[in-house]
Length: 107
Image (cartoon, rainbow, N blue to C red; front, side, top):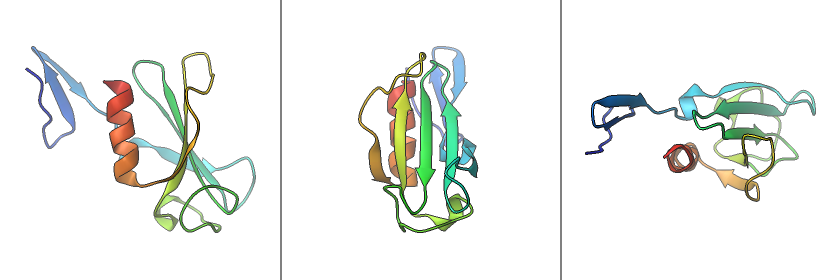
């Protein structure tokens, strides 16, 4: 039986698996420079998400910021274990959209 608890855990049989969420992403200044941010999140299955925001990104607002709190939505790219992009990057993704994507990819 599988269910989700308030602690973002999945229980499969007797194994408890804590799911990562947007809150687990650590953001740093993007290599583009000041005003752009990037966060990387590696999932247990080797898939990696790159979450970015800034003036040249598909985010809201489309302006400079110093951290995720400065943005309402983000641009997200998904990479496989070998570093290849799995699908087209997705623009204007909310925190909830990103949490849903993490759950789908880590499933």
